[in-house]
Length: 350
Length: 99
Image (cartoon, rainbow over all chains, first blue to last red; front, top):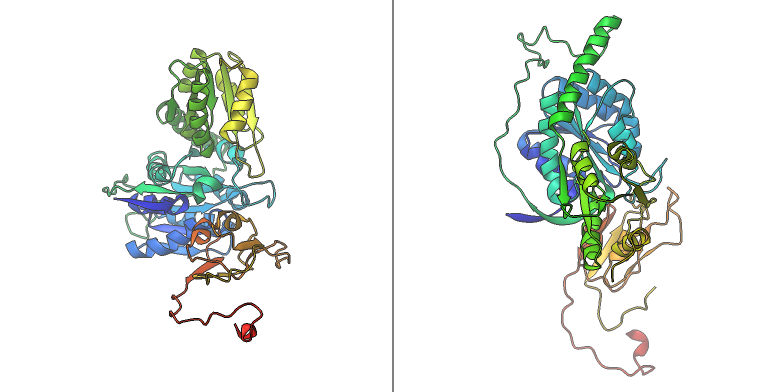
C-alpha cells in the first residue's frame, strides 16, 4: 500500500523494517522529523529512542549500541555532523556498523535551514581523523530515503563500517508516495559484539593500537575492506546516456531537476543524458567513465561550490571537458536556468 | 497583509511557537489563502517568526506539513458556526456598530 510520506519520516520507516532498534540523536532543522519519527515508531517495535544532550553524546551512544551488536542509527544536519566527526572516526577505527543520516542544509557555520549539498567533502572524503572511509548512499526520492536506508544498514553490517545516508533538506522535507515492503530482518551474526554474556566476555571493541606494526596491520585490513567495497558496491542510475553527447552529472534532488532538463534538452535537439551516482563512496567511476567517453562533454550540477566535481574530474581524468554549475545558499536551479547554461555550451539545434 | 474577510469566517486557526520557528518562510509561501506572514519583530533567536494574520485560515494544514520544525505550527480546525439569521443592516445604519 502506498502512503504519502515525508522523506525524513521514510528514513525511520525504512530503518524499522531493516531491523534498527536504537536511535540516539539531537534535533536539528531540517532533520528533526527523523528524530520525531524515531521517537514515535521505535518504542512500538521494542526499540530505544534517546534524545541525547548533544550530537557528540549521540554519536558516542551509537558507538555503544553498535558495540553491543544492535542495528543503530542517528541523524543530523551539517552543524551536528561536524560535532559527530570524532565519533565517526572512532566507529570506523573500531569497525562498528551504524547508519548516520545527514540531511544537508546551507553552511558554513549556522548557514540556514534550506537545502545544500555542501557536506560532500565532510561525509564522502572523511572529516574525522585517520585513514578511513564512510560508505555513502545518496537518495533522490522519498522512496529511496526508505530503500537506501535499508541498503545502508546492510552495507554497514557487511563491511563493519559506518554508512552515511547523504541527503539534502529538499528530499528530507518533501512528501511523496512511499511503498513499503515487509521483509525478513536478516543480518550477519556478530560474534565480535560485547553483549555482557560469558561467550562475549573475551571480546574487546577499541581503536587503539599502540604498536606501529599492529596499527599498520589494522589499517591494511581496513584498506582491503575499502578496496572490496570499491570493486563491488558502486551503484548508479543512467537516463538516456546511451547516445548522449552531453552527460549531466548530479545526485540527490539535483538529479530530479536534471532528469527534466535532459527531456527538455532532447526536445530542443540537444542529446543530453543523466548520470546519477547512488553511492557517492564508493564512487561509480567505471560507469561514469564509460558514459563520459561515449559523450563529448560532461556537466556537473551541484548545490555546492563544486565538491563532487572533484571526483568527476578524477574519474574523467581530462579525457572530456567538464563544465560546472552550482547554486548555493539554499537555492535550487530550475530547468530553465540549466537549459540557459547548456545552450551556452552547445549551440541549440532549433 | 490581506484585508480582513467579512463574508467568510475563518475555518481554522494557527498557533505558532515563536521560539521553535526559524523564520524560513516556507509556510508563508505555501499557504493557499495567504494568511501567514513573517512578524516584523525578532524572536529571542534573532529571526522573524511566522505570524498568523488572524483571518482567512481554512484549516487545510499545508503550513503544518511543509514546516521543517516539528512543533512550531499547530493548526486547529474550527467547528462550523451555527447557522443563525443575521439581520441585514445597511452600512452606517442604526445597528451597524454592533455587528
